[in-house]
Image (cartoon, rainbow, N blue to C red; front, side, top):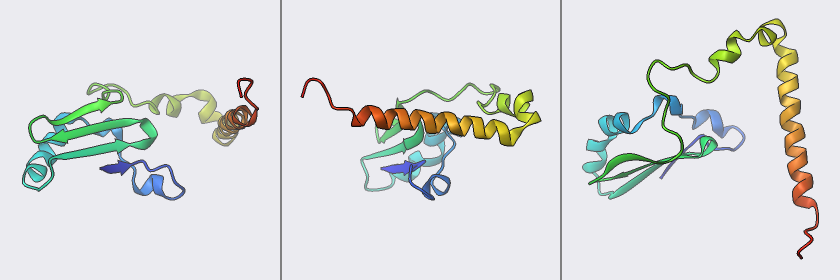
Length: 121
């Protein structure tokens, strides 16, 4: 199993794989012969942050088994809209702080939720 996008400090960047650049036909073209010549019968590629898993077997080759298929060729990547957004262009630092605060608030709410005693205990 190959784990990419490992959600640990310092590891996300070094293990990052861009899911928009991955698809089963590309994985088959690049890796099938290499794996078929190995002793392995199965291989997996897990993109941790995107909850995406590709699986390889000799007979089935690479297939997407969990996650969303990549966007069709020619479609826009998710962050392109952000790069054109007037609010981001006008005050990128301020907008980034707002988004970061939203994430912190969401994490704090989840933490409070998990610390609350359960009624059914």
